[in-house]
Amino acid sequence: MRLAARHLTKGSGQALGEADVDETELAGHAAHLPIFITAPGHTDWLLVLIGILLVAAVLGLGALFLTIHSLPERIAHRSKKLQLEIVAVLCLLALFTHEHMFWVVALVLAMIDLPDLTSPLKRMAVALEHQAGIPSEPEPETGFEEAAPEPETEAPAPPAKTRKPAAKVTAKTTPAAKPAADKKQES
Image: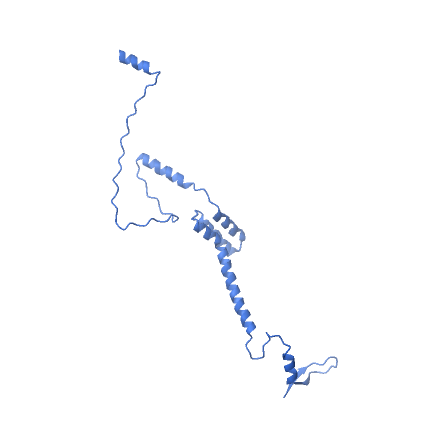
């Protein structure tokens, strides 16, 4: 059996011509082809393998990117930082604007501890209210502390604490004032 192939002859100026090619000649050339070249009509396994690897690499790199991107937020959440919301907003801004400085600032904020200035002020306010006899308001839940488990049975309320009346302050006599007190007692 003979196959016909069209080719262009060099320098002869002829148009397309036909040359007869033997099938055995094609089989001899096929032996020298690399293994990844497939015959016409067969499945290209290398293309399928590279396609699967490409999809897996894109999904894996995307998951890695999002994991690293949420790192500051997870650090701040795990250590229950007060600045958790600021860190979360900075992470979202960095994600949607592709400004890496937002992510760096969020990571720094998640790593450092900001001083808690409100707790001492709240304790002072509660102490002043207690001294003045004003009932203090219950503190709102901040969400950062873990809630204590609810008791299954109601415990009896502790007895109300009553304040003792203040004792009268008497003036103490100093050694210099003692002779004057003695003079009063003698008369």
